[in-house]
Image (cartoon, rainbow, N blue to C red):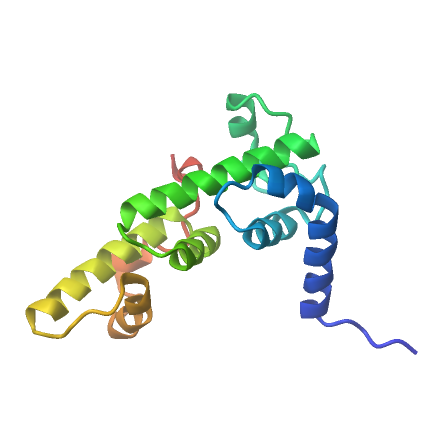
Length: 182
């Protein structure tokens, strides 16, 4: 009798098989973004199916990288072509990394990848709102003589000090890319 695999074991197998199958293409196009981050995002999005289509009626995300169909048309990429989908996913990831490095000057590479994963989870608007709020919180602490740590390191402390259920915050959480709300 075989034991059922845990969700974590199944996810790990998915990442390993996705990395083995598409790793060479990812390495070719990944730029500055770590291979592991791209493997995790693309594997979770598409489950390794190059013909995957999301259930989202607004974005209609397709292919391995689950890029919105309108973006694939704009970039003249066949979303069901493995190479094109991986190229587009890598281009978008590098654009996100550049955006966060510009938004948070001096941010470390590790914190950039953390923000990219957070963006993937809660959306760009929510991450940028959080960063602006943390900056303001750090400035208030600095004015009271409390030395700041690092912007990303201060996010957990800010979250504990802020009631995110308040109405002014609730509208920012859960938003995804601008195409959903645009």
